[in-house]
Length: 394
Image (tube, rainbow, N blue to C red; front, side, top):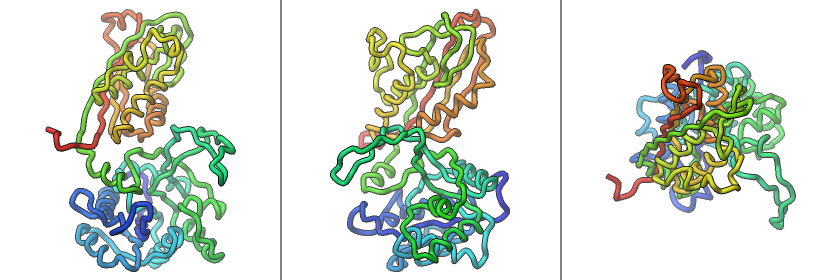
């Protein structure tokens, strides 16, 4: 881990009852791959920060259940404290426990998010080290509606200015402790995440790229699907487009200035077309031409992000997860290097995955073939997905 404070602690919130999950043992103690869900979360935290102290906030009635979790978490610097009636109160009690030996930075994480990666932890730590506070977030892909008590639409918020946030959330310990203390003094305990606590105390909070695989188990089907993503598949995509009149090309949804454009029925985004076909290939779900026939006038001039999102929706409909995208652009011009980061960031945002799950390379064809003669561009792509397994899997 680079550029991190010398002392980091983890505060894991696991005192909830999980009413939406249904009756029975609280969800954080349900089985996930042979261990309690909370234990799997702790393993992910320990893998990211092996030297960090970990405080788990638990319900007073769950001490025996937590002992089983602790047995699965041998070797960790682990302790538990009793939580309160709300999430905010539970975090405040956990922070008071950490105050005995205060760290420089504290990461607050949901006990039912078992798939946070070391890369995600690193992003929030590095950002919080620079700004004091950082949380991971993902852009919204669905249209959002505001409704009244009768269920009638009253507004349509601009989704471009909205994010769905995740944990771990990282804070300078002194600041988050002061923010919680200020609200606790007013007996105000109704905020649902710690970024809101910081904002209420007047602090700014930075947002870094989240990870769509960092799911929060909320309903029974979440645990069922999450525990059964055993079917890993890859698909490949390939696309070419010729140069024609124009002053730019679209690559990965990013407008790149150029002395020519790419010719196609849509916006001719050769990169997104290859990525889209890679996703369809991994799903064994046809190709872009089957879903969006080039002779259909409704697709003329359309942004290729529409096709890419359709393939992602087909993946979501099968309860799958996108694990990785890898693409190579083949061309003499334009030069891709100056634009590669922006392209990767836009693809990651479109896909709802973290930047470290998007790889992009570029190469020439050594002046050979149609790309070498500067007549067009080509793109190759590979998509890796995870689907729920079945008894028929080989």
